[in-house]
Image (cartoon, rainbow, N blue to C red; front, side, top):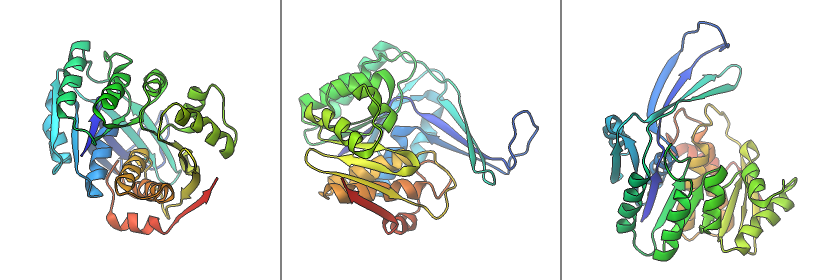
Length: 307
C-alpha cells in the first residue's frame, strides 16, 4: 500500500489568457479549477497507474468534499481544519508559451494538530508500505515534521519518499528517507556545492546514498532527470509533442517512478516510466489529469543513457 501524504494542499485555478500582459484588463478563454497539491496529484496518478493508494493529510473544512470527488476511488483520511485551502493560480498564454504563477496563503495548523496527524499516520502504517511526503509544509507546522515522519517510517519498516525543499528537505534528508527527488538546485543545497555536469550530480547524489538513502532522482526540468542508485546511474529525457501545462509534471514523474519501482522494474525502466508519465502530464491542462494514451505515446519518446 502507498500512503500519499498531503499536508499543504492547494486548489489549482488555471486560466488560459491569450496575449497576457501585466497591467492590462484581459479576458480568459477558459478557467479550470482542480483540488490539487503535490500529495493529491501523486495519489491521483498512482491510482491511474493501477497502484493501491490511500491519501492522508490536512484540508480546509469547506474543501474536503471536493477532494473526495477529485480522488474518487482513493480512500481519503482528512484532518479537516479551520480556514480555507490555499489557491494557486496559473495564467497560461499559449501563444507566448508563458506561465505566470500566483500563490495565495491558506490555513494554518498547530503543532498539536501535526502531532495528532502523525499519530493517525502511525496507526495506519504496516511494514512494507510506502509513504510519499510531497510539497511544502503548511504555516504553523514545525519545520521538522517530515523528518519525524521519515524516522517513524524507518522504525516501522516503511519506505519513505521525500520531495520537498529548503529546511524541511535538509532535516528530512538527515533522517534518511529511502527515496528522494530533489531538483538540481535542492541537491546543491544538500551537498553544499553546485553540480555543474551530470557526473558531479551523480557524485553529490551518491553522498546521500552513502548515508543510507536507496535511490535519488534528480529533476533537471525540461532537460529530464538523473536517477542514481548505489552502483548505477542513468540520465534521461522525454519530449512531448506539445506542452500545454507544466504544473504537476514533477508529481506525475514521482508517481511513475514509484509505480515502476513497486513493480520490480530495474533502475533504467523506473526512470523511463517516470519520464513518460511526467511528460504525459504536460500534454493536458490540470495537474495529474493524464490520458493513458499519452503515457503510451511518451514511453516511446524517452531516451536514456547510462552514466
